[in-house]
Length: 493
Image (cartoon, rainbow, N blue to C red; front, side, top):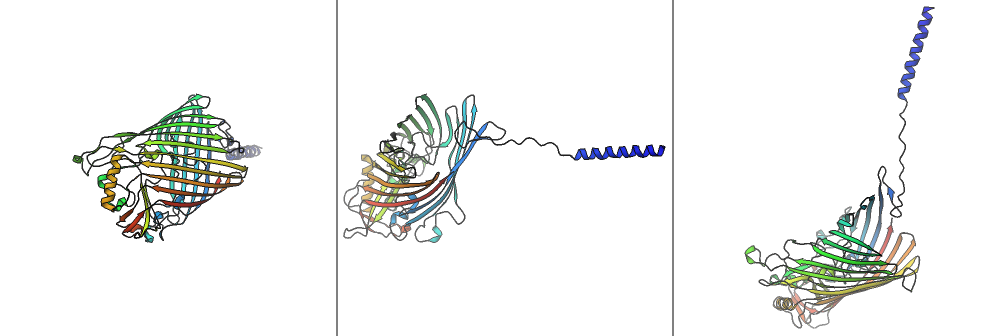
């Protein structure tokens, strides 16, 4: 009997032990899955980041471009495009992915926003001269990374990189078109700044900004005493003599947004701070001079020609701040060759140089003045087809002292005959059609004509430009033209 009791007690203890072991092996109850929730506060595409009250949106596009007649959808200028010979590329292509990240958080101070826009690009390159090793494009399997926008917005302030408050909302594309339309500023690839915007209600806002001037806003600041024949024949009139950046550009803008469209008035102040007359400090330097620019922009929506049709217009004047007209994507010096009918001339040539200011050793800075306008009209034939016409015009005008010095160099170094005047005008006109077969997928065909109206006449005697196979010879000074076409496929997401 005692043996039976012992056996039962042992069995019970064993069952309890086994039961305890099984209980320990049971899985712990999992936490509830936190699903991503839609954030409807800031429009379509935003989601709450799990575990936070911050909303995030991803976007961008994939684009494939083919350009016929000129590289990078501009006009045929510079090396080697402007040579207009067997070194010139008439076929150009680009593949790009743009990726944007937008975050927003509601706070007691208003919405805190961060935004970044990154582009990954593979671009057809060019050859310098006829040397295949001098290829300047992206390599096989390579490409480039660009940062267009990266900013924080808080309580009306913007800190970081984005478009300038001076710019019109359409940048330099009033109805599409190339990257080289004059007639106003363009910082579509972003500029570093600190800005503040005040909202006065009824669609009226006012903004001020301190903007980095080192890349987007500076044209040339030439010491004309350093001119050489090799540079002048390419539109470079002297040594580019910028000193260090001493002050940012100061920008102000007032804007009115209404159902009919918008109107904007912008001003900018731009410091011209040169280095030295010569290579060392004892040679001295000119004093600083402030340039300025003023711009007006107007957009009219839903014009009577059809729903969604629009007209965009702007005009600008600059004095010592030329890139607010001949904008950041416009070449600041260039040359264009073509044929000639002038007896004794090898070919014809147009040269152009843009500057904020010029000086000679021992003198002060003389500012360069420019003016321009651009505009575009877009018509929607139906929800799937739209066409546009656009154009731009810009003029560069040197002061009396600058013209005297440049022309003295042109006669001495290039044996210029005929009229000497470094002023020039530049015009662009074009048309495009966009087919959108489905939402967020568009196919574009865009054709434009560019014209350089230069003010030289007679002939130049060139020392030759070896990089583009141009020999030392006599060239006719002549206006030049360029035609290019863009074919684009783009998918937004």
